[in-house]
Image: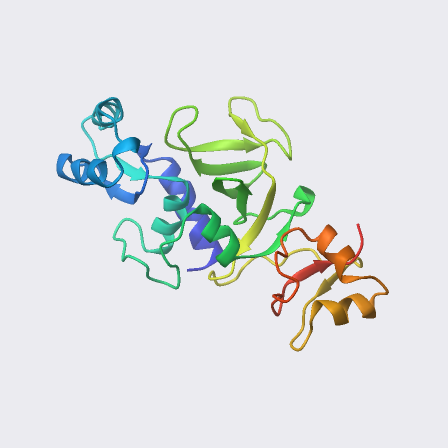
Length: 229
């Protein structure tokens, strides 16, 4: 899947009849399916939740997602999903962020459409023009378009402030992030200590300004490392 395909599918789903439901990635609402999910996640599916989902069918197909399920469902081929296909395992929101996102940044002035937005416990997709698509239990409780308040508020849209963003490593034609003179792109054979010495700094200093690096011994080719702030 290309980055453009990914964005177009995200936008398309935001226009469909959807609802937030834990542990789902685009399945259609049916009584038998909801009974199965309620048995799997009893705390997430009290009778009040199930009644709300029934009401949302509105006489037409209701598609169910959770926040990371929106991304997984698209990569797996929504609406005809093939479970764990196209290089994406069944991971939670943190797993998507930790295992599949690259070129992470907190500089929202450089964000490009297709970026995965992240805060603790939640992910969304940036679609451009200061807007995100996310599946959330907040607000209307479905897949919706929201404003990225890191960029600015938008009349008529709910706003969310995100912590950081990155790009899905498994997409073709990923956006090329802006590389400043204060950044370094990791090459084959690099390690953080060598990069630090080359730029007259320390590993500890690099870790401080690159919070997405959780392990100093684990960096990858193509990763962007901020040398100075």
